[in-house]
Length: 348
Image (spheres, rainbow, N blue to C red):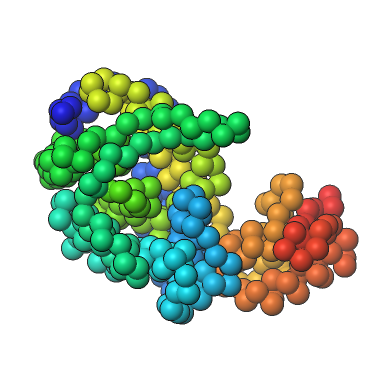
């Protein structure tokens, strides 16, 4: 089995792009922290929207879906799931809520990761919930002609528990000793986790939950207010491409994790930038019409009512709909499509 030595990371020479991303994230995190201290109540709406988006997007990446109404009912009202997809969605909701509330007392160990996996499947009868895999799994791609190609073969089941222990121990050692920059160690840990692929099911969702947990434990809380999972889902081809490139040579210990590190750091920075945009709209005391007008002023191309709802979390859905109608009537916006397919764009 390959070796895991995170101390070696500190001697690696990182290119200017990675160093620039890290510096920019720290700058944004400082602004973020200041804003949270000054206006914590005004940002609670962002938390609720992010929870719904994160739960919906992370499950949708794996093909687990339900309606927008049901997602909100499952996450916000904690209603009872009706089918298998909703059971999986409810499990994700529960783990995410636990991380939000108790991240500081959830250590990074195999035992705790197994417990989180058990909660992920707590609404359904899955005999492998909270247990590492008992069959070999593969990371595959299905081509348009139906041909299935194996892109990567993770560790075998008998190797998995020890490997999971090792990456947790290495992570805790270098973070505890402050040997390596956390924003480098976090993506390296997540990449190793995905290469081990420790569970029969739920590896992708667990990796995204662990990303949130690790970031919170290192003081980066943007995922609480802006959904990282939604950003990954929007550009999932880039996510899979970066992961695939970083997996080459992993078994031999000569992989290049840089593509995945850059991808994850870029996603985190993008979330911080989004937070800035939304915080300005939350902070400014404007009428519903003026708030929506400010939000659409920053939109290029087509956008939906949901896009505006994300930018204006303090407004009710009916207020946003009313404002959009007025902007269409005044000629500031154009509307096209009907029903769920309705979208808008700026007229000038």
